[in-house]
Length: 338
Ligand SMILES: Cc1ncc(COP(=O)(O)O)c(C=O)c1O
Image 1 (cartoon, protein in one colour):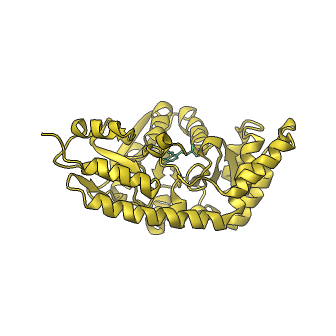
Image 2 (image 1 turned 120 degrees about the horizontal axis):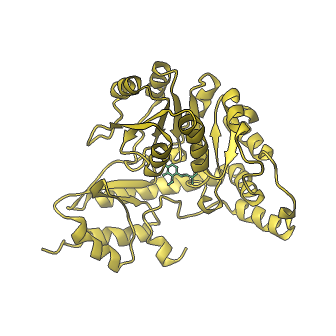
Image 3 (image 1 turned 90 degrees about the vertical axis):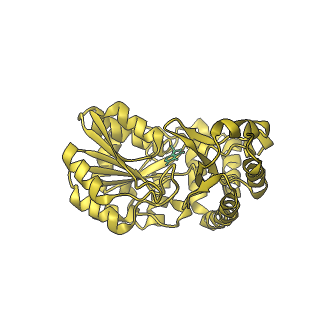
């Protein structure tokens, strides 16, 4: 990675990148000009690999250009055409909420508990019932707060309490927790789990993600899929990445370890309140200082952090390499100008 890329703390990517097996598979495919053929029309090989990985059936999976594309199709079908109501926690992953906003008749946002950022499950159920919500979107670990906002018991409570509402559970960062609720689709038809190769697997630029759902629900999603929508090199890369679970475990352990040091460093800073994270990024609140005073110090070092217009006193920073994290910590530690 270039120095400028290393200073990008805004994108929540894995700075160590993908498994070497992915590079080998891509080089072999390129040398063989394998892409002269149309690829695997419905990603059968990848779906078979996913079925082995999750102990599910290939019919439980639909593969897309990123989990973002899966989310868009679900919102178009379930909200735009059906004129449904979208419900989600606040704050949540802005891009996915924005898709809901464009597709839904209305959007209901249920505030997370400030400070702990936990999901008030009863409030969520009441708001969904009150609004007649048909699609719920929840990211866990949540972006931007970084914490897991669901466990199995709260998720099943929601699914059981709201049978008419389809839950899009976004698990983009779940590899960092080594937990997934994908297995629940065996018995729950109102759950669609969105997964991605963009984050821990290190394939963000290749665009591969998938949904996991009950076979009947997945069949409905497949009916509105574009044939050959995911290109053959992206599928080759995803198959190789999935096949190297040892690398995934190694890189996740390394990033969790880096994150521990990063969080400890953030915790020592006087002007920052960092929230605990189960993902590979940290939400930090600026205390006793302002973005206006911080911005020039970050800009001078080429540092880019994630900010949101609705949370002006917060920054979200990805755990990059230990050396890059140190540069950020030093920039944040510098005394604010009076
Ligand atoms: C919570 C969350 N979900 C999904 C995505 C996007 O995933 P994909 O690259 O698979 O579209 C991101 C990317 O930043 C994210 O933060």
